[in-house]
Length: 412
Image (cartoon, rainbow, N blue to C red):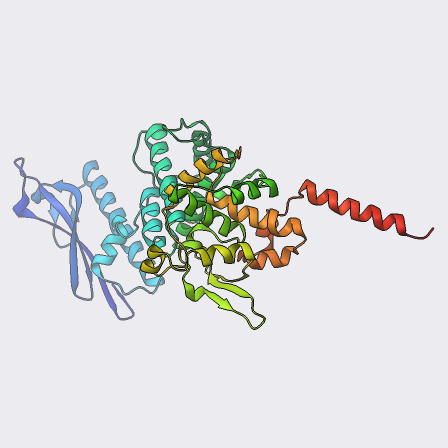
């Protein structure tokens, strides 16, 4: 058989040196493309006396001979069809490629765990450590779910469907937390599903999966208020003096973030070069947000500038070439819990509360336009900033008093 520049042939033959004890010999098929060949067992055997070598088929009229010849013809048709598929796809055809297409070896069946491993290995070079930590947790929960719910260690991507998603959601909602671990709330569950959806969407882009089963699923996040300090709580921490050095440093770092809005990782990476003096004598912080790689320019308020000046000659700061002392995030949040207890702060105090405090208590509550706050926080979308724009009762009260005065002076 010849098509354009390719020569293609399929023949059946016996491998007589592999004869079994009953005298039968296995039948093989030889695929030849452009003079190069590969062989494949057809999983059938025959007495050599009943084989027509020139025609490559069994001879005789018995039903078992007819059945065998029909089987061989179907086998040949499948190989020819595989060749034609490759030809229509304009592939560089080889005998091995035809064999692999026919046997299905060219169609790799990707699995969920392989997808997750691929994603995490690839994105670990792009995403921040904290973000990757969340993906590793999602990976852990998926493996738990596969083991408990399906008694398996993996699933083919083709097996993912809407039912798999809702069963995984149910597992997350009812999962027993480990020691010192909080139970997953609704938004925590949705975050794990969101990460799974992103990874499955990657599989679609890579042509590992024809469509994303999450198309039929809707993530349902509950609106939550971002915790922040009230002006009184903030002043309580500012005025508190600590004799323990580590608590004093943590207090300063926290207050610095309250007046700059910088996240923990961004504060840790600040150097003296990030402080720029403008023509009007004001000092600005000019840096980039690690999370979004966006430029941030923040005029330094007196409270933040005073903290910078306090550590100008600090040996640790000078040795590290930093603007402020640095601690691990875990220790920082641990020490903040001590500060919260001493200062009678009832809410859970973490370093990120400082960023929320800057957005809400320091800026928005004092009339700074949300567009300006968005720039100061380094948000790429103003909708992200709107999460912080809750109405604070004290500001609402001031606004209404101001409105009342204006209405009272209006002429009748």
